[in-house]
Structures are given as C-alpha cells and as structure tokens.
Length: 154
Image (cartoon, rainbow, N blue to C red; front, side, top):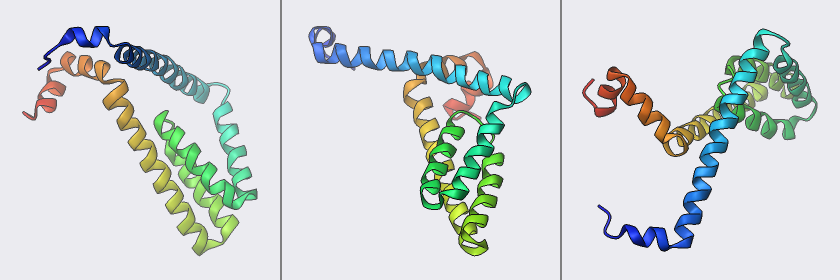
C-alpha cells in the first residue's frame, strides 16, 4: 500500500533511478535475445562459436591458473546465454587434466565447472526475477498451467 504517490514523481532521485532501471531492462531485452539468436543461427551455419570455444580451451591449457578464472567467466556467460554447457564441461575436463595431471585436473575442472555453472544460474535467476519480471508475468498469465504452478495450485 502506497501512502503518497506524489512524493515519487517529485523526487528526482527516484525518477532517475526508475529511468535507469527501465533503460537497463530495455538494453538487456535487446542484447540477450540478439545474442541467443546469433548463437542458434551460428551453430547451424558458420560455427564461429565452436571455433572460438576450441581456441579458448587451447589458451586455457597454455595459461593454467589464469585459465581457471577465464574458464569460469566464460562458463558463466555461456550459462546465461543458454549455450550448451556440455561442450565446455567436457572440453574443460580434458584441458584441465592435460594441464594439471589427472587427479589435480579432475578436481580443478570439477570446481571450475561447478562454480561457473552455479554463478551463471544465479545470474540467470536474478535477470529473470528482477530485470525481466514483467515479461515473465505476462508469459505466466498467457498459459493456465504456468499460472497454476506460479500460484502453487499444481
């Protein structure tokens, strides 16, 4: 329940913050679908994404410790952009085992994949929960089963 709606419209800080959030939402709603579309089209045509993934995995093998953090960062971005993680998971395991040896590479690879996947999932959740909430609500109302699930009546 709001007590005073006029206070928000006269408060320049609230207006600026609201404008910034709206701009950020618009930017995210334009960039994310564009990147996802590019990746889907690229996977079926030129396969630049696969080439860059292979080059990145080779670089990670050559730069062991820097490669761990870079791998986690790429895994986070890949998770947010819905790039299938199986390529990076298998490739990361192979590269880390080659770079560190079997035992240590297996542990480092597992931790890197788990950390990157978890961070990517958290970021995806936050994007869906806060930045894209309006779209999710519209989508839920469009489908009765999703609306029932959202209300806990499933």
